Amino acid sequence: MTTETPRQYGRVMLKISGEALMGDQGYGLHPPTVARIASEVEAVQAMGVEVCMVIGGGNIFRGLQGSAQGMERTTADYMGMLATVMNALAMQSSLEARGLHCRVISAIRMDEVCEPYIRRRAIRHLEKKRIVIFAAGTGNPYFTTDTAATLRASEMNCEVIFKGTKVDGVYDKDPNKFPDAKRYETVSYDEALQKHLGVMDASAIALARDNKLPIIVFSLDAPGGFRSILEGRGISTRVHN
Image (tube, rainbow, N blue to C red; front, top):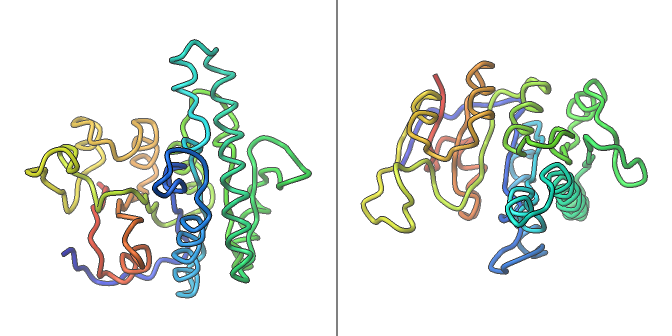
């Protein structure tokens, strides 16, 4: 088990994939899973931590897959961005059902359902202890939600990015396929890039490196996992200089 001195972060970014919201289904949203992740966020906010989130859209539509099937890439990517808005609204609903204040902020304007991205307004929401979910990626095709999470974390002056996955850190190969897979306690940005470790896409890792923004990869499937990492009790991999 990884044990380190608990570190009180003031503001963090939580990045999760759209697939994390599927539960055991093969597609779409699984409301009990969304509610469980909302409870993880609630537990961290109760520590006094300001939380912002980016959620992928792969449970509904993935731009790269659409492009691979013959769809024009830009159109496919915009469709993927719209999928992230749907996931963000589902998470907002679940958080608000727990009595938490939450705002969805979209990089693509759709004023009837969420706010447009204005940096100072988003920071003010965080200062007021509202959870902020950034949707629609960066608003541009050819950029992933990993890159969007790193960009927004940098703009919001977050101290760290938490990447919630189905495994408890970064491995040298897929631990679900190879029993002898080795988990890294820490790994440098350059090593993650050179070895194609799959932490995030290359653009996101390079942006995090340039802004000295550490990435902590942990399992979102473990109950209480998000809070335990902040308390120094959980298992994770830290990507940093």
